[in-house]
Image (cartoon, rainbow, N blue to C red):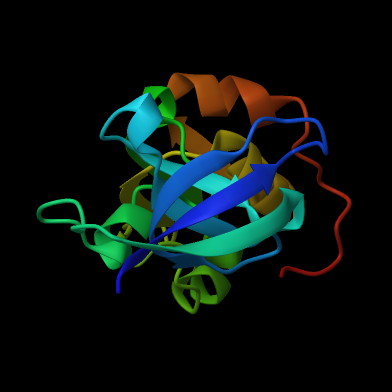
Length: 167
């Protein structure tokens, strides 16, 4: 190998696809990370639960030059990739939540900065605002999104003060 795969993806009547597997992303949903030569050189994610059938072909391929599954995975917060959302993410945790937040690895390339008031700033670059919003909801009003603006607007009306415990 590596060998190409023929996939039936999505629905039984969907046309077959030929893909070049580059790895797997495992999470609450698992994804096959692959190129689909008919769609260009870009790397795509295929939800494993939507792959209805797969057949290994007797055709090898070259991995995308410079591809690193770790670097690819780090472009997202969870597993979802959306290049339009990829930018710097900045969260500010309130002083009462800072120690707990400091125990978390929110992203493999995050930086953390303790604030003079006891708060904590966490920064990283990633996409996947919906997955971030799901995670941030657990923190109630103990976290504030400073950037990006689109994520801040997505979660702002869902911050709550009545959670008795932090994640």
